[in-house]
Amino acid sequence: MQPAPGPRPPKSRPATSGASLNVEPSAALNAGGVDAVAVVAGEDPIVLRMALMVRAVSDDVPLLLTIFDPTMAGEMAHELPNTHVTSLADIVAPSIAGP
Image 1 (cartoon, rainbow, N blue to C red):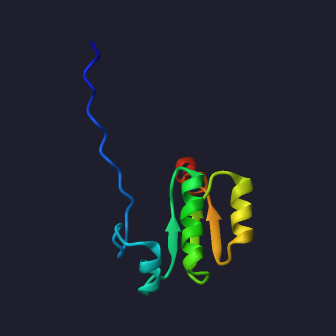
Image 2 (image 1 turned 120 degrees about the horizontal axis):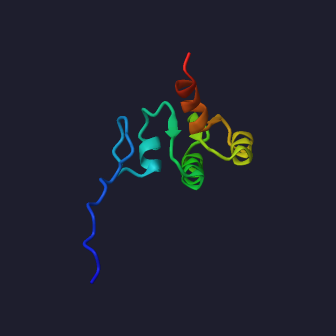
């Protein structure tokens, strides 16, 4: 007899600002009104894929990427135009360290 499964954790959804999650990146970027794109995820491959999807549509829109691996971060900043790369650790560290 197998134990009963525990409660399922709630599904997380990324926060969006002005764009629906059901819109394709190309449709959202081509519709206009997008000043910049921030790709924040805990997994570097997800960030890489999203960044490449955005760049396939537009080289002009500024990108902010969160990438943990320093080698990959350097390559992305070098290869993708108009891109700023940081890591979640760099964002969170000052709030943990305090004043």
